[in-house]
Length: 300
Image (cartoon, rainbow, N blue to C red; front, side):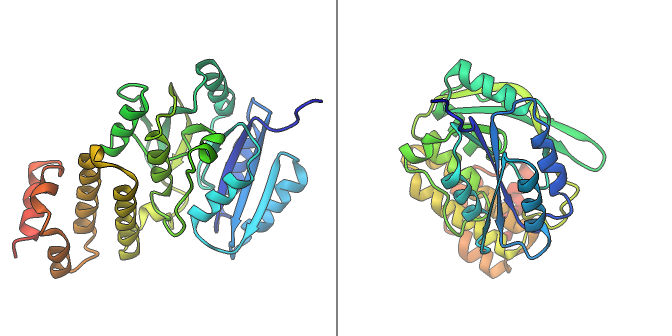
């Protein structure tokens, strides 16, 4: 009996994306590789995104649509994983787009390397230029890749990582409900600490768009986002052992400086949270001026 299951499942969490989702889905449907499915998870969008998703499903059998009540991107990604049929999975965000050979080349690399995770480079599309982001790890060992991730030498997104689907079930890795910022980064951390086999492909296919979605959570830092970042740190502490304490402190220092830059806490609140641990965090703050700024914020 012929196996008709798709080899790759592309998961796209969708929320209020009617202005740009066409570009994303069209770029996926134009892939040179054909044995894949696209799972569009409509996270209770109040705009016309759901109807657009349904229209794609009517026109192309490779497109599957799941409609759900709004619960955030983590729950949408998890629902996509739960319903995926492919040997491998990859995520895409509706405000981004991909090059036509992405799935073919990632698939070939996964097969030749017998990899659980294939990491590739990506493009950042800005107003004035497209920036190439190299993601070559220090080495292909899972532990080295995890270290690169924790120390910001690698991006934590899932859209430039092809991952074997059964890794999620075998290692009981899932998205944390309610964590809707760095939710993908945390999943990468969980998978890598299980010693999965990693391969790297030194090509970029994914375009991380910084233009079309002015409401992107990564471009609007608020108190709500800060609290999500703190929740992320709490989850890192929960899932990582003492071996990775420096990586956790690096991330905590990043959050402290974000908080300071965007002024989402009062001076009193900032001091109450960060005074106790200031000398440990200071070590992981980059730059002399930033270190001085951090200490001054805790002194007055």
